[in-house]
Amino acid sequence: MKTSLPCLPQDPVFIVGYPRSGTTLLQRLLAAQPGFYSLPETHYFTVIERRLQLDDNDRIAVSDIGTLSEAIAEKLEVRLAAEEIEMLTRTAQRGELTSKMAFEFLVSRFLASQVASVGAASWRWVEKTPTHANFLERILQVYPQAQVLHIIRHPVPAILSRRRKFPFNRETPLEKLAWAWNRLLDNAELSRERHPRQVHALRYEDLVGDMENTLRAVGAFLHAPSLLAGGAGIRLQELPDAPVLPHETWKLQDMNAALANTNDSYRLTASAGDVDRIESIVGGKMRQYGYGHFQ
Image 1 (spheres, rainbow, N blue to C red):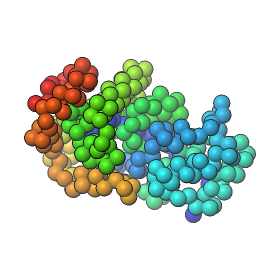
Image 2 (image 1 turned 90 degrees about the vertical axis):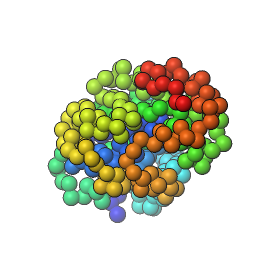
Image 3 (image 1 turned 30 degrees about the vertical axis):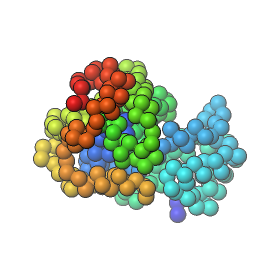
């Protein structure tokens, strides 16, 4: 097992968006392109880093290695080997272990088998944690050359899908999920205003309805014209599976589904009361993105 800290390309692509808004589909489309390699959601900036007591230089203390290991096990279901913990500990003892290095250690661990034969060729890694949208300022501070794809979906089906698909959200009040939709867009918009060349917004409905033109815009943003290839008539079954963690059973179901806008399925089942409860909170912002009343 390799136990040295990695050296990764410094221009990664981060895919973000409200959960159940098409982030996994976008991840699979990008990973299907030559030179792009993806990994499971890390939740690093949303959860793991926030548990660490970083110093003014973003360094991790030896006393926090246990916290780091426990957070990785909890969020990623990954148990670090003894030699990996020893390597991180030695680096921390020298005062050299930064939060960025710990994050890249995780990224490299997931990508090792994919990029082993890439060598010095140009390639980019793709990290997709939807709620990293709330931490884009931190991410762009750590990776000034990174680019962000922010995908947006009509809030009613996104929120209802989140409640239906995620076991841990089935009892969450719709109002709380709606405020989270607003907050995530507020944070992503702020970063897009500050870093227009690094944050690109697209709509889920456009991606599935006009994939060719939507991917053309994404390809231009990423300076990757190959994204144009196969945009029309692509089938989900032809895409590589998204890297998933064992508990993410909903993603396995999505990957076997047909490529289509699933919003209409929620129109058939959503109650008028639930739609009104959601839209009373998100109505103003959803109209900014061209979304009308859901029913």
